[in-house]
Structure formats: structure tokens, C-alpha cells
Image (cartoon, rainbow, N blue to C red; front, side, top):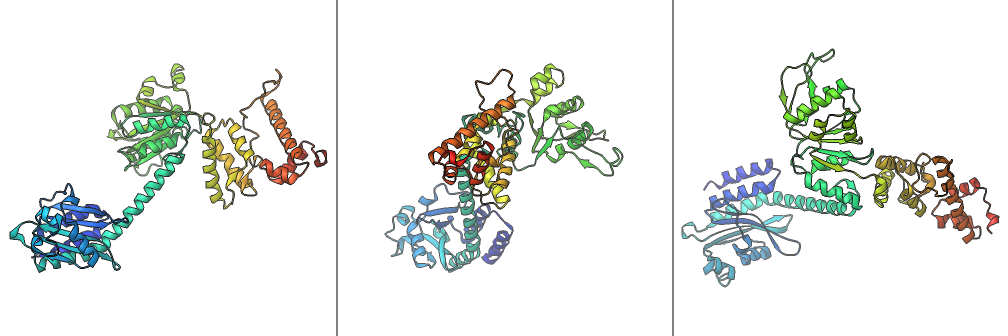
Amino acid sequence: MSSYKTLFEIGKALIAENDIERLLPQAMDQIIAQARAERGLIAVYGSDGDIQFHAARHLDKKDLDQPDFEVSRSIIQKVRESGAPVVLKNALADPQFDSSESVARLRLLSVACAPLVVKDEIFGVIYIDNRDLAAVFDENTGNLLNEFSALISVAVKNALDRKSLLDTKRQLLAERDASRGYGEIIGQSPAMQEVFKLIKKAAALDLTILITGETGTGKELVARELHRRSLRRDHEMIALNCAAQPENLLEDELFGHEKGAFTGADRRKPGWVEVANHGTLFLDEIGEMSAAMQAKMLRFLQSGEYSPLGSREMKHAEVRVIAATNRNLPEMIAQKTFREDLYYRLNEFEIKLPPLRERGDDILLIAEYFLGRYARQFHKETSGFSDEARALLLQQAWPGNVRELENRLKRAVVLAEDQLVYPDDFDLGASSVAAVSSAAPADSSFNQEKQNVIAAFEKEFLSARLRETKGNISEAARRSGMHKKNFIQKMQQYGMKREDFA
């Protein structure tokens, strides 16, 4: 029996193989062949005492369909309790197991079972059996199984621990995603639930997708989520902003150039379509693409063919294109500034993103995410919002959407002086307020009326708190969810004096 050669080959494979779940079935096949066994498997004890089966194989090199019904649990339990290997020439005649229901049911003849041990902890067994009189196990079989057990124990334990950590991580990520949104996208509003449904339906299909919505609504996040859930997720996703490059540079970025194509082109440069081959190409601001580039992009979408600058050779790339725009493309088509045929090529499936002002309490979810992110980045202890700040966040129209909210939160974290963010920590002078006065004079400007609404609200709010506390500024500020310093500044702004409320 060339058992040591077998063990040597398995040992080399264990060192080279990262995926032990793929290696163990192959190793079990070799052990089954060497021991002339009929079946073999690895059994691991779960935390609740149950038995989990791995690499359960038959001599025909196929997986056992129901390994828990094809082995003797009584023999496995005996090895677990004693910590010693078991080798039986005839299990049916052995006084320890002749009354075993599984031994009798399976009509087992030879059985060998050895413990898997790491640091004196028995965490599982390796088990083989047969029902063939011509292949009775002997001492050599037991030695082979023991040596194999010693060889694989550490690798199996490490693999199981790693798998447990990965399972825990996946579970935590799934719980996090379910609690705040979808993948990396934060949101629970009905409007975003519809977006998530569309992502789920379209991600695995090789459709060209057009993502539309106002600036700052998170179009690139949606594109990345589509890629992450697609069949192309193991390949590159390249993101390119069509508005950030002049026409000639955009063509170079997309399709690359050959050496000598222009002055300074001293070497060949692959374009992003080549880099993204078999992956995803995300074209942001597609509405800003020039007419000439639109024609070249249409040809690429139709055939997958392109020609690098300075080359007469046609190349081919197999790329999924996701495009995004905040422009009204049908309107641009009517104005002859965007090709209708390109629009239909891009818009095989459209995902429209709602503006932030239509997403309700998603505003607070996103604000809390950015608060935590920038508090960690700036080493601040800020961890929440005052009630007044939360109300103010919900009142804003957020014309710049999530991007604007992120900028305001970054500033607020920098300015915050304690654990809470207060309204004065936001720089909202340039933002539009959602609430407007129904009694605004006909000649009143938007900005003027906005300031009047804010001033009336703030003055009445502070006055009410001061009346409740009989002029106690510290208590009034606490009840308002404001920092005392900010409260006093507001009082001074509106000419309010403590004694007027005492």
C-alpha cells in the first residue's frame, strides 16, 4: 500500500489549496481508494452537539446523498467520547456495536474511525466503512486513517473557523442591509423600495441600463450595486464621467490609443472598454457626450467593436454598459442634441431615482450614516442630533440631494461642540426651505420670505421655551435641544432678554 505517497500528495495539495471544501472531497476519494473502503466522510461536532457532515463520498467518487443515514452514529459517538480511533473488521460481530441499530441497518462489516484533534480538542472524526468481505480493514487501514487525520486536522479546523467567521460577517451585513437599506444604498422609504425591486430584477440580466434622476441622488451607488449583484461581479467595473473630459480626451479614455497616435503618445494605452472587458462600464453624465462621441458609442453598443486612436484595426470588447444622467434625454432628442437611436440602445431598462425631498425619513437615516462616518474621520465625539436639528433636516428641500446633505453633515460635525448636532451647526443659508408662507406678499422674493419664515419660527420657539422656564436660559436651551451658547446667540439676534420672561 503506497499510503505515505498518498499522504504526501494530499499534504502538498493542502498547502497549495485555499478552498479546503473543494480539496477534501478529492482527498477523501484517495483515502477511500487506498483503504478499499465503500464510503468515507468527515463529521464535525456542532456547538449544539449535532453532527455536521463534510466531504461525504462514495467509492464511485460521487457525494453521498444522505450521509447522516449512511454511517454508524454509535461508532462516531464512541470515538468522540474516548478520543481513541476505532478499527473494526466485523462491526456486526463486535460486542460493543452488535446491538447498534445503524450497524445492523447498514449491514456494516469493516469500519474505521479516527478523531480530528487540535490542541487536545476533539472537534470531529474521519470515518470510512465497507460491506465487502474481500476488503476487510486491518491495522494498516487504521494507521493510514490516523495519519490522514493528523495531517488534515489543523487545516480542517482553520477552514471551519474561517467559514464560521464569513457566515457571521454575511449575517451581520445582511442584518445591517435589511435595517437601513439595500447593500451600500441607504433607504427604507416606499420610493426607494421600488428602486431596490428594479435593481434586484435587472442586476443578473445583461441589459444596458439607464439610471436617471437629479444630481446627487446616488446614481453611481446604484450602478455599483447592479454590478455587485450581476454575473460580472468578478470582473472590473469602470466608472467614467463623460462631462469631465473634452471630446478628444473622452475618446482616448474610452477606446485608448496606439503608440505614435499623436504627439506624446510614446506607448500604447488601453482604453477603459478594454480594461472592463467581461465587466461593467459605467458612463455618468451621458447627456453631456458630444454628437461625434454619441455616434462612436452607438457603434460600440451595437457591435462591441471599437478602434483605438491611431489604429486601423477593429477591436472587440464584451462589456455591460450602465449609463446615468440628470438631463431630460427625450427633451434633448426633440432639440436634436441627443441621438434617438443611442437613447433606445441605452434605455433597455430604466431606473429612476427619487429626489431626497421625496424620501421622508430616509433623510435622517442618511444623515446618521454621514454623522458617524465624519465623527470617526475627524475624531469627534458627536453621536446624534437634537430634536430641533432632526426637524430642520426634514424641513429642507435639499436641491443638491444626498451630495448636499453629505456636505452639510461634514460641516456640522466640524462645528459641533458636544455630542449633539444643533441647527446652528448647519450652514443652510443657501438651501431652500420646504415650508413657505401662504400669506407671502405678491412682491416678496423667495429668499426674503424664506428668511421671514425662519425668523418667525425661531423667535416664537425660543420665546415659548423661555416662558416655560421663567427665563432660565440653561433649562430653556436643554429643552430646545440646543447648545446654551447657540441659544444665547439667537436671543441676541432677536433682541430677547431673560428678564422679559422671568
